[in-house]
Each structure stands twice: as C-alpha cells, then as structure tokens.
Image (cartoon, rainbow, N blue to C red; front, side):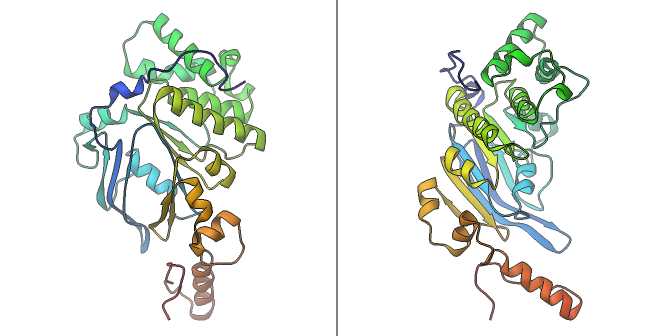
Length: 296
C-alpha cells in the first residue's frame, strides 16, 4: 500500500539543502501577458518550508503559467521568483541550476521514458547530477520506490503499468535527489477516485516524512480539502483568496463559493459570457471586468 512503508524518514534530507532562513519560495510582483491577455497580474506571495500549498482556480486562470515560472521554464514579463533566497529570474545560469536542484516536479503526464524501466527512470536524475557509485544509486532508487509503494514494479516499463502507477513512479523520480521542494502539476488528472486518494495520501506523507514544501496545482476540490495546509486561489490574474481549508469552506466570496460548489452560474463564467456576447454582436471581444462584479 502506498505510503505504508516503515522506513524511517524522520530526518528531512531535503531540509539540509536549504540555506536561507526566509521563505522557501517568494513570488514578487509576477506579471505575464500573452498577446493582449493578462494571465498573471502583479502576483505576490511567500511559501514556508514543510507545508502543502494548493494553487487552485478555474481552467485558464494562470495556474500552469505560474508553475512554469516558478520552476524557471518560462520567463516573466515583470517580477521575480526567489527559490531559497535566490532570485532565479536574475541569476546566472550556474546559480539557476544550483537553485533548481532543490526542487523536483511531478508532471501531469508523469513524463516517464518508455525505453527505460521504472527504476532506470528514477535513477536518471541521480546519474545526471551526481557521480555516486552505481550501488549507491541503486539503493537510493529502491528507497524512493518503496516510499511511493512501487518497489515491486522496479523492473517494469512504463507501458506495462497503470496510470496511477506511472504517477507514483514519476513522484519517485521527482524526489530522487531529496529536494526541498516538490511541484505537482495536476497530480489527480486522469485517475480514478481511489487512486486520487492514494496520490493525495502520498503527497501528505512525503511532505511530512521528507520535510519538504509541496506546491500542488489542481482544481480538484476533494483533494484540496484533503491535502492543503493553505490554499491560494487565482482568478483574473490575481490572488483572490489565501487561507486554510477551513477558511476556504467558510469563505463568503462569490467567486470562491461558485468554484468550491461547482455552481454553473456566477462571477467566474460571467466575464466569459460577456466576452462571447460582445464577439457575436460586435465582432471583437470587449474585455470584461473580472472582479466578480461589473463595470457599470
């Protein structure tokens, strides 16, 4: 069973890689525009070590764009991202690489290489970034696979295992180098409810056992309430809510209420409906207000 291992991981190995006593991640005035659409509009927040943060919001709200900027896969138009106190938006290539070794990423598709076994996939980042002996790498790989409940699948190829097993193998690879931070891009996508629960439990267990900071991009409400220490909701390029799961449940903000209840009508889709109406009437979309109200 995933997460049921008795291996003692009470000493947070990833913690030793952190140098700054400040926030593990700091996003400062981050802005991104595609053509004439503002996707992120002056976003700022800080994330502390050892907690699970969920970044949530409706499709197209900028969650994935924010993730790509935090991991350095996409440049911002303005603003800064600090990882362990290092401004990765201004640092030289060597410093950026050093900062990036402090995090792992579980991609939505798991992104395993079909020509390698599960064990070889997990070993890949260790071989790329260290000069450890093969025997040491093999031990590290077995340990990571046991942590995610995949010890029996080490010699299987990705095409021989299920979608949920691929996600767990991808997670083992994400933690292969004992990172201080793990980013999860829609970890529940394509999974059945039981396997979603397994992945959620793994995220909570690994955060606790490894002492890492987990940043989870998702719009799955059951997962958000199960795993989050704090939730950050994006809408209209802005942070419209930040708080605990309990505060999320109790929020009276119309945007938050519509999202967590899955209501078909409300402020989230009102701007889209206004834009579509403008397109039909005038041939070009008028930019609507997206603050949950209107411009008058």
